[in-house]
Image 1: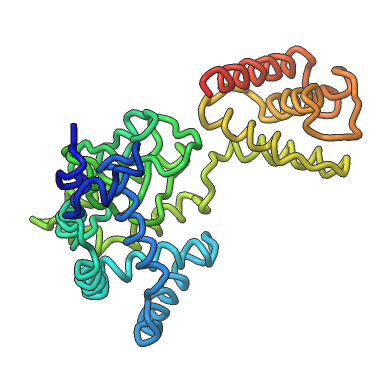
Image 2 (image 1 turned 30 degrees about the vertical axis):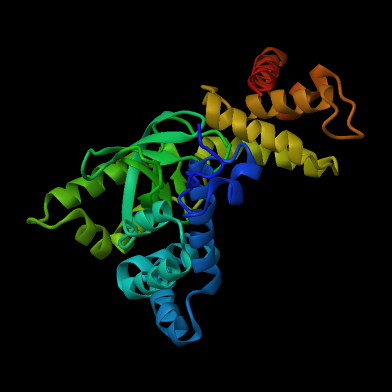
Length: 332
């Protein structure tokens, strides 16, 4: 147990009674995590500076010329921003860290910052999912890491992801966090990752860092050629959601709550339906029964007929959604 006159375990150098005693449940890990998060957020609030804007825009425009037919301008700019800072102008990031080190007083935070000088770009495959971390295999090296989950949205095993990573500040080996953009790819594009691995294997002694820097745009071009458009959903999942939205639009209704539940259901449960509209019909019955939209009162037969599916097919996915909702409520 820490005495009131002992040094505070958060590493501030102050006595415990003048630092974290009043915060009771605040742990060293929590304090460290919050301070590191502020360091990351402040960087994107302050940079790029005016003097570096033109160089960043030149790089962004080069990427847009190659990718704008497939990806939104916003998505391209987000990808290029990290490319600019961590592959082209690392001096900006490293200069920022030096400034931050002069402001930080906790030794445990400074120790982590010293490990942050070179964020690493990775493409990984999700091998496992728990409450706080994803187990991820980096596809170019087969190294397995723990990547901190940033949101509570479901992540299915087997999907691939892209991001720049840094040590997450814990004492645990191979535990990382995503610097900013963490992009998940639908399972439709497995062939792209296989081809990218083969491209790396053909290089002669090139490090993964060099390869990711030089072939970064090639990776996104390969995805574009495989009809990836930036969506987090497979073509099938997108078809289900579009069918639901078309039905709601036709009846002048909106239901963000229904769409949110169905999105999570599709990603987490990966239903093996023959027809997209069977799931969409089941979702509409589910939404009507749960009161997730107004002014639509249709019989089971009428809903099925509007999607041109059998009542039995529709009811299967209606029941699956009910079971999924009950399971989610039980977990929460």
